[in-house]
Image (cartoon, rainbow, N blue to C red):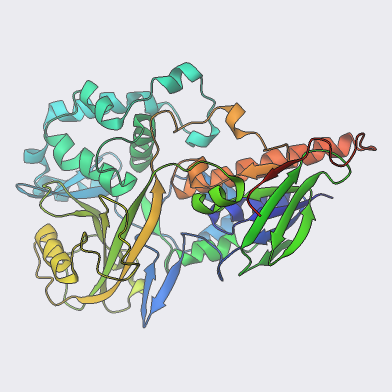
Length: 463
């Protein structure tokens, strides 16, 4: 039976470990921190639960349902937002909703400002822009792609211009949603990725576990047969593609251990240090959490700013759908995308590029038309490298790019896939599948290995 190391206990690493153990391989997960789940997690502040930045996952995402057993998924108690996005227009708050999916929301839709905000021509233009994506039902990670098609991918702003999605719909809905869900402030993301994400929002419903996203991480980490080593940052990774000692050497706390295969599913800065890989640009965000005792209008939606009067990318009253986050109170999360990298002031300090707490209260009051001046400041989270920028041509990878390194090392994580929970998990499942196939092939061809131990050795990382 093959021994496999999984470096990194985030969602990609946990998905890989689930697949590997499910196939009967021995699996050891090395996690540098004291908890599993990576970016997906929650913490308690008094009686309030806050996630690591505002997080929600789409009910359409297939990877989560494939990784979890039906009973596990059901036990999360998913609480769903309404299948609509609320946007602030110059004429007031408007709803963007598919009346076919949510006929019960038609009266509310008619009372909103959506009729004055959008035109029929805009709607048809958006439908035409998305048409090429409607026929697909899979994650981007599961598609094969021809180089010619990949070469046709362009920045989303250019693609929207070509499709004449340029008027009010672009200003009050499309561009704000790109900022909210892709953290894209300049329209430079892959059009292919943007179309896929928009269609998944139309097919699924955003939601959170009843008691926080940390429950999803906890559930994913319940893997029979897996060994977990927390507070164990990997110092060195060394691969031998062939020879009597073929495999992967993992060094932790000065001790080197040998494995037949490994999956590396760690943040890209750590991967670049260990494997000398190049880094893709990322975007950083800050999320403010506020608690309010007074009543807010029922808003079980994610709200975006279609006026540009605030820096808020998205704002949500989480307790509108999941009251257990803050029993008896209203809990609001508001996210701002950084125009430039986080300053050297450090997490938790007041970055001069970011709004103050008082300014954020004013912006939220403007966004929702409420008095937010007395809202309690719960915490602010500054998240560097919150999401990789999916550049044109990078939304889908060719099979040649997805092979095991030296036949032994699988790479996983959101920067090897789409920067979503679904993408991260797909990348882990994909790396595990390749290792399972390699282990089965090696078992079928088992026999004495010709050649000296040193033949074909390659090393990665720095001593």
